[in-house]
Length: 43
Image 1: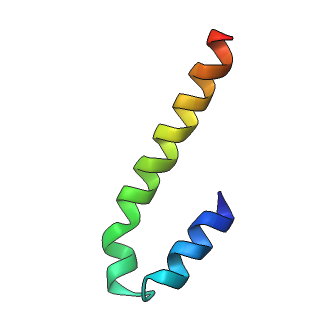
Image 2: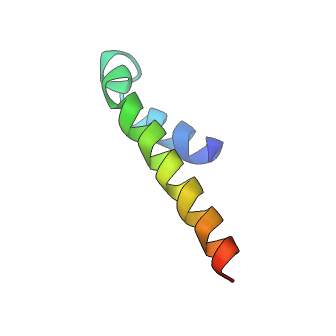
């Protein structure tokens, strides 16, 4: 996960834009985490 965030930070100029998109990254992390957990539980 950290590698993805770092690569995105390289693509985006760090600063106001990064802060603007931060909630989306947190939401995406939560979605992937919950999806992964449900996938494990259903197996």
